[in-house]
Image (cartoon, rainbow, N blue to C red; front, top):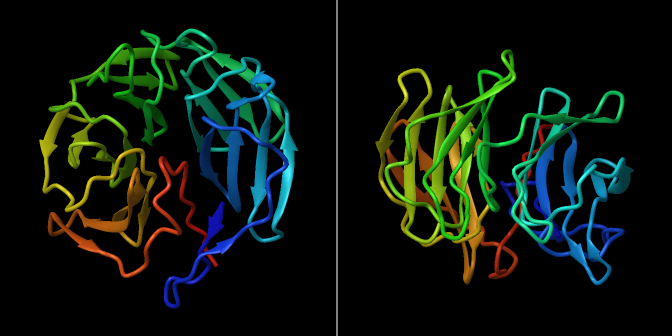
Length: 258
């Protein structure tokens, strides 16, 4: 695990060794750091969750998930950690949320289908679940209405995006990267998709985030490049900074505000 603290003098530094040895976990940015959940170890599927405090460089233990799982997805929004889908020997459609204020887990209505390696984004307090893999990669889109506590299906993605990522920006969802260099934008208000300029490089199993009004994708399988997409100009540019190595599947990226 690595940290870059200053993009003006870009350099990666290793962070404190985590208190676990797991693979196929999920991780997501949260205020002041990031959360790691689930995964697999030599002892089997894991329920454990940890929060890394970037300022103090410390790992903190959180209450374990109700359901052990791996190859799931997670996202932090409005004081809650959401974990969705994944695998526990079979594909899961369960959705669980940890309230970070009282550290209590709650069960949400299950997804309409079982899926692993899916993409998550929040727009206007509603959770969007996009793509993922069943027996094969799918283009499904489902929206969870936080007020009605119900799921509804939305328009399919215009193409399959295997091993990509999703971010929310300006009340839209962007799906980027993956094996076929996807870049597409979903408008939840009118339920439509727009295909956009593709990145230069293949970013398979890469993390993505919004930084200074642009969308950044980080590395991926056999790829250490970092690319930045401008929604304003529908164009991509490549960073000078490279990933620390060509790791087969980076799990997350974090933006820290000073």
